[in-house]
Image (cartoon, rainbow, N blue to C red; front, top):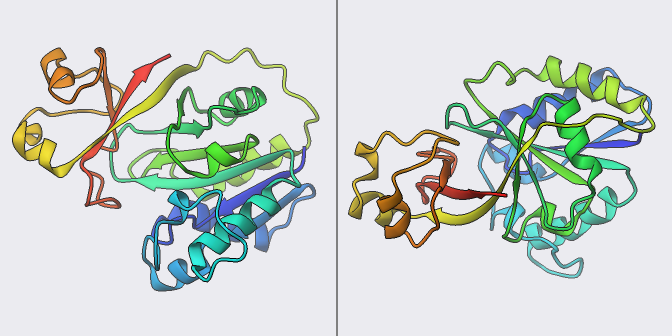
Length: 235
């Protein structure tokens, strides 16, 4: 299986950058790496002009760096069986994978093989929506999975497989709502002790126009201080 490891989609999220650099230091057959947003990595910032992971499918002829880079990344990723796009979050117990609506079913087997048991289908413009072979990996900074060496070894084992025969027991969700800072203040969400993937009160769901049960994600994430989090429904 030919694998592309994408690090630094957001330049201040360290795990993917460190995994990519491990593979650069210790190359593995069938595994290539790309640092998605080199300018943001250099600046240790999420992005330089606009969020790269909200710029897909991009525009190869754009004067905007991130729009142009998004189109370039899609072209590179299309040449591989699998693209693994790494992210971090400050939110505890938030480890999961993200895929697009048109995701290759193999991505669920891959997620299970890599130790992820929750998958979120993205409903917004991101690399997953544009690349059916891309699994984004979201790992909490405080998680035991936040170890570059662990991912290096798991991806190394994955790369020698031609197919996966797993029967994954994966919980599937859909991203349905972005919780705003206004929601946080108006609904006193800081006092609700919301936890990732734990259902919220039905009245809170109703107040935000989301069907119950709804499950929060990325709560209070310092990487995205302009949002409070997101809400999921199960599939």
